[in-house]
Length: 252
Picture 1 (cartoon, rainbow, N blue to C red):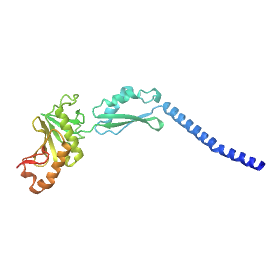
Picture 2: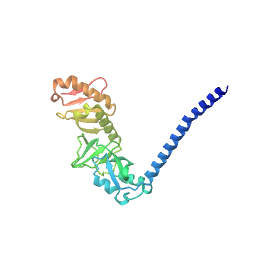
Picture 3: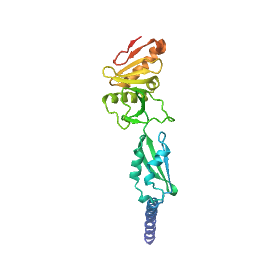
Picture 4: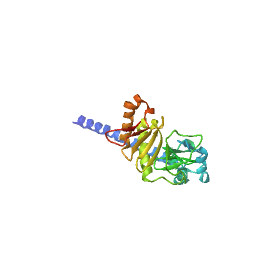
């Protein structure tokens, strides 16, 4: 009996070791987390860097935080919200977040808006992004996007919110996703009767897409091109009407 009791005690003692070990691990991890938090909050910022930008210049980004530069400050003394808001106010900046690297290097990660089209308004030119947000042209950083007519380029601060532009935006977004539409269309306009009107990149043939269901109509355009245009040649057409459900009407 005594042997059995002795064996039972050893088993009980052995079963406690993993619990003690696990508790120790959690304690060490907890100290590491607290230590890391303390380190980050008490790190003195030595430098600022930016990433993810293309149209916005590094000079613009630096200037946006120049008046409240965090360099030399402790991390827990910096108003990060205010700094990010200053960067966010730049035309191309859609979003921004911040990360802290080793040795106090602060990095702002920028997400930029992408031009969807180039607005043509007389002699004035501006890019426009999704949501009708106008963007200035950076001469050395141009984008190959369709030209859009019929909307005001100025003032730059005004967002295009009309139903007409919403239809054009929906069409351009669908064309981007279709890809065939994107590479075969060069100019886009809108009018009340015909809706979205586009010109082909080749020969400037007029394409009528109407007011809605652009994804389907772009697929019809791709199918018609593959079955008919590729055989007869784009020069055989003056106008291609894609507004109808079961037919494509052409003027040759």
